[in-house]
Image (cartoon, rainbow, N blue to C red):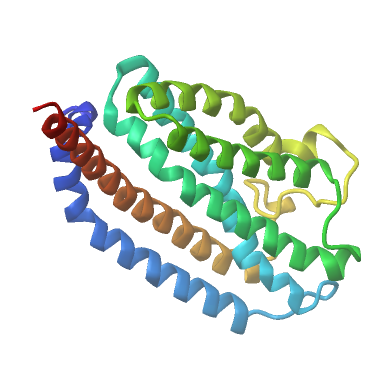
Length: 242
């Protein structure tokens, strides 16, 4: 069985209908477990106090904001190369979800930054690139809405997605590219020496799993909606022609 079989809208909807309830349930379990564990059963940090617990929302949201754009990039490349409509619609479906995660990351970052840095916002390289990424999300969604022809919209938004990927990379690695800036380095890393303490690490992993599953569930659901909306527009266009 080839993965390209799921480019068939009917098969995509049938398959996602089966797995969607399980993914949604997994997301709910991980989010509830991770947040309760992290907020109520971990100690305050010796320097940041209880403010550190914003970490359980901020870090997963920031990770998914960047990874959502990466998923859109892959889907856009599939559209450009293979012209599979489901991939283009999946990219469109992911954009509002990724934009929401970006807003959550920016808002929670401001809540953390005010007591830690003494300011709600700083033109730090990572923060600035993250803000620009959010603007690319808005531009991507606006471009889809502004063009009536779905194929033309998919072509232009795919190009925009390629350009915006630069800022997704900068958002992830700005701390490494520029040594100066207020934003700290990665809290979670494959290098154990750079990680937060295990008492914070394990609930954070559960929260990240919850955000990943939530993203997948929302993208599946929204892609189904986009497929049905596309069908409805096609049927309406045929009726008008007849």
